[in-house]
Length: 236
Image 1: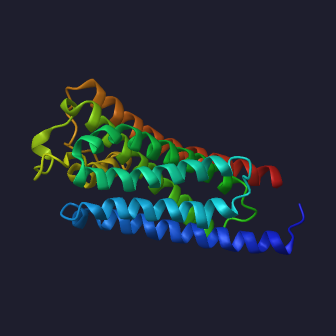
Image 2 (image 1 turned 90 degrees about the horizontal axis):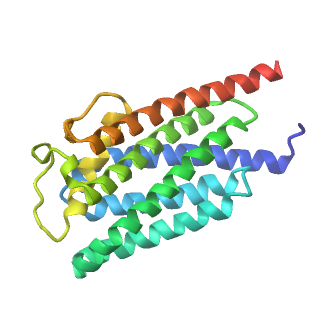
C-alpha cells in the first residue's frame, strides 16, 4: 500500500495525539488525591480527556465511518458532565436525576473509544514508540471506563460497596462527586489485578464488576498483541 504525503502528515498528528492522550490520562490518575478535596477537578480532567480523544486522535483516525458516533457521544458526555456538575451544586435533585444518563454517556464514549483505539492501532503501518504509547493510552482508557462503571454501580446499588474502605462523604448533596476519585482509583487496582477492598466481596454485583474490569483489561492486552503480531506475520 502506497503511503502519500497527506497520509504521513495525518500519521504524525495521530501519533502526537497518542502521546497527548497518555499524558492526559496519567495526569488524571495522579491528580485523583487532589480531586478528593476539589470535586470539580475530576470533571475538568474528564472533559479535557474527551476533547483530546476527539481532537487529537479520532480526527486523524483512518476509521472515518464511526467518527460521527464518537464525536456525538463525546459532545454528549461533555455536555452532561458540565450540566451534572453544576446541577449538583445548584439543584441537587436534578443532579441526582442526571447521574444515570451522565454515567451511561461516559461509559459508551470511553468503551467505543477503546474499541476504536484497538482497530486504529492494528492499522498502523509501523510499530513505533508512539504506537506503543497509543497502546498504553488504550489500556489506561479501559481503567477510566471501569471507574465510570463503578460509579454507575454506586448509583444503582450502593450495598455492593464496603463503606468503611471509602472516604467519608462531607456533603450529602454531592455523594457521587465525592466518591468519584476513590472509585476511579479502585478501578485501576482491579485492572492491574492488585485487588481492592472497596467492593463488598459477599455481594454478587460487586464481584461481577470486578471480574468485568479485570478480564477486559487482560483481553485488551491479549487481543492487541494477537492482532498486531498476526498482521506482521502475514506481511512476512
